[in-house]
Amino acid sequence: MLSIARHGWVTLGEQNTNGLPSNGIANLQEVIPLNYTDKQINCVDCGSAFVFTADEQAFFAEKGYANEPKRCLNCRRQKRSEKNDSSSAPRKMYDVVCNDCGQSCKVPFEPRLGKPVLCSDCYAAKNR
Ligand SMILES: [Zn+2]
Ligand SMILES: [Zn+2]
Image (tube, rainbow, N blue to C red):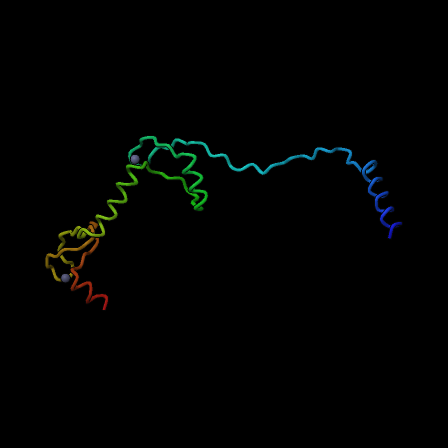
């Protein structure tokens, strides 16, 4: 037991004197995180410049959004409220004359010139 222990100490001592790494300083290659900086973007709706802040960019990256915002905050808000309005407000109806029965009726889409328009009755009859 004693001899083994002593041998062990000797080995350690040898390592301490001879086993030093030639270059003690390792290359510290840190993984540099993406640095976000505030970015100016021109709103596609109103054309005014707005700031896509570093915080927002980090937030977007975290959420996995690949696209940058295209609209300023105002337009985004407006867009949102428009969406809400259209879902609650009645659809815009267009006055047309039915191509089949000749009756004037209303359709929820804008009739195109040269395209036959059918009233809901004839449309239903055709697609029966
Ligand atoms: Zn805008
Ligand atoms: Zn009709």
